Amino acid sequence: MKESIRKKFRLTKKAFSVPYILFLLLFVVVPLVLILVNAFLDSDNNLTFENFKTFFTSSSSLIVLGNSLLVGVITTVICLLIGYPVAYILSKMSSGKILVLLYVLPMFINFLIRTLATKAIFIAMGVELGMGTVLFGMVYNYLPFMIMPLHTTISSIDKSYIEAAQDLGADRATVFLKTTLPLSVSGIMSGITMVFIPTISTYAISQLLSNGKIFLFGDSIQLSFEQGLYGVGSIMSLVMLAFVLISNLIMNKFNKNGDAVRRSLW
Image 1 (cartoon, rainbow, N blue to C red):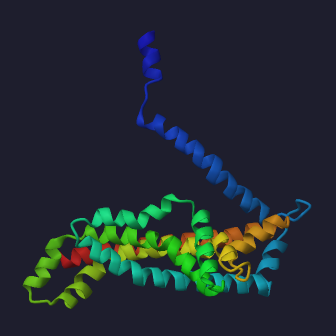
Image 2 (cartoon, helix red, strand yellow):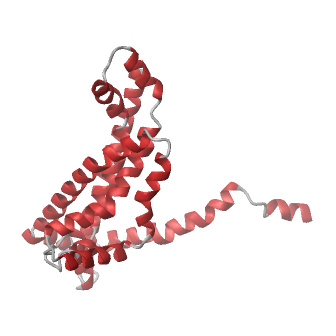
């Protein structure tokens, strides 16, 4: 009898996954279902498509979305231009893994505190808050998300590919352009995804570092929910979700292309 009870309550891998599944259901699936339902309900809880019409016919909402995408693209490009050389150099250093921690350490501090500190520095220096300070804050907060996947990908590249290219007479520039860069595309796409999506959905950074002058898509979502416009806010949230899904699809495609490049080089 005791042995049967022990077998019944024996801890397995499936048992350890139960808390995680419950967490996902409660804090991921349920909120997404509520957002999807609210997108099709009006203030009287009647089925309607008016929320879609309100968002997609509002020039101000589309302009805010366009501005958010522009800020996201600029921030991502700057992070890539800074992050790739840093990740490449660190991957060549024996102490690179330790030095990467220097870029990650600020992430242990709450981003709101980091942003407030950045704002205080700008004010102390007499720098006018606006688009420039917002872009600086974006890059400062999300640069580690670009460096980490790039460093991991570049460090994992098989050195035999580079040695084979050098043995065939390729110079450093050719080795980088023909071998290292193609093999690091998956890391580039991961970094782009990890920077672009949070950038266009953020709201605290843009508000604090511009004194409310810059209004991005995340700010618009927050304002809609604060004003009780749950239907319109839900539509905006679904738009953000669509960007996330599209980005993941693109990233998966490039990962497959990266595997194809590895096979062709081999």
